[in-house]
Length: 402
Ligand SMILES: Cc1ncc(COP(=O)(O)O)c(C=O)c1O
Image 1 (tube, rainbow, N blue to C red):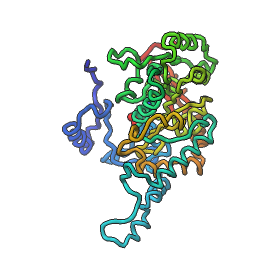
Image 2 (cartoon, rainbow, N blue to C red):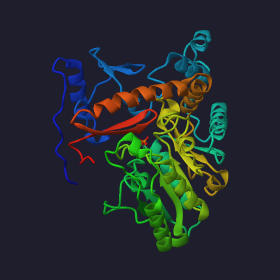
Image 3 (tube, rainbow, N blue to C red):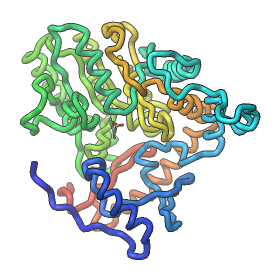
Image 4 (cartoon, rainbow, N blue to C red):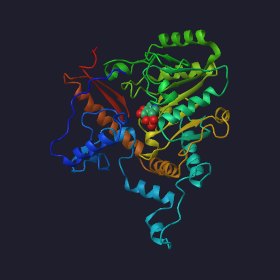
């Protein structure tokens, strides 16, 4: 594999603790564990919208922990609720009359069931079904990462009919790096691509102004491409997977009619329509789920990141009749449906359902949009693209502007 030249690292000279932790990590972990960032921040503590280095330097976190901490880092009430659901509230700890153990939810329930898991499934399904576009949300297939949720969703689609083993994916999407999730990420440029995957175009309007992007999209070329691919592959296509917007692929947010076209293409041909909301769920685009924002009703929605506000919990949620094609054990693993993850989902839903999180997010979105728009006055910035609370800045050096 070609080694790309990395930009220079940027580390404040005065931060000795950070420097020694970075050096230790470089010795004891392979570099492949993380994406290169010039600053490689060492984060000791986090609170609200801020991180703190071990030396106490405050960093504004414009990424919400890379689209995870939608409620902010470590909200006190949320933490209290997580611990309460788990039965490890301070009062439970204090009232324990045993010296070494106290009674709380198990921290491993592999191949068993916890009441927390049942409650999290029920609350999540109720929440998803109550939103426009959530009509097909009947069962929860937990996973321990976003890519795993995507893999599980794709395996469900492949299990429907052994004669239908082709997968359509939108080009330049990001669904993860492992296995089938990696196979539907990116484009056909990878020569080792899984032969079951075919890519279709996703609208990428370079450098256009917000007003321009809000104009209707000419669907004709996209429709023609879909029809052609269907002529080529016929009934071999089992599913189509897309993100609501290209997140990792450069912050391209399509017009709603594009996703609606994909949905109707799938419906007319009995193709499973999978929407990867790992980054979009829990208010990122404005409403609770991007399927509401884009006016579509997916067969399977993959959730992650903000779902547990920082606790690793992910899921593929969708039609029970589809999930029923996999039998005992085919989607099981040690961590899926983990009690800590389920407690985090419940506590996160509590916040979204009982507080005005979404309304505050929408108000913030207007502030961001206006502020970011001003950046385009700089010659280094040629465009901003985004919606709700997910925005990208395109730098002039990266691509030509229109
Ligand atoms: C849309 C989307 N899908 C899937 C993934 C993969 O999730 P994970 O890194 O948890 O495997 C990501 C991660 O950034 C993502 O943005």
